[in-house]
Amino acid sequence: MRKEPSPFESVWSVVRAIPRGRVATYGQISQMIGRRLTPVGVGWAIRAAGDDAIPWQRVVNASGGISTDRQHPGLQRAMLEAEGVRFGKDGCIDLERFGWSPRPPKKKVRAKARVTR
Image (cartoon, rainbow, N blue to C red; front, side, top):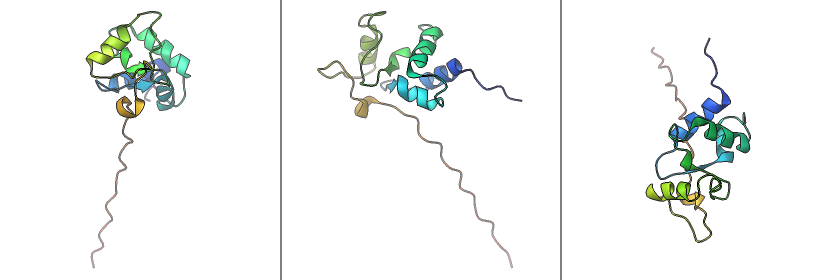
């Protein structure tokens, strides 16, 4: 029997999938893992991973803003800008332009059985 990953492991897997130059929100990640954690819980999972374990800088708040400035003033923004992410005058990222979401899984199309006569 296959063991289901913990909610924290699920968050880490999603965060690792976010490509360079893109961001996702805490709420999006919560949805992607079936709401097994709240957006705040997603933040705790990211924090528990350690600084170099996952690309934590690619996760932002719902308005495209930085939520880590109290712990690391300016670090997250600098890291994202180094990846090509741009911030507006309001200090937020345009989520339409830089937001990421995984592609939905492709549905397998079954070939119809051929009838021979």
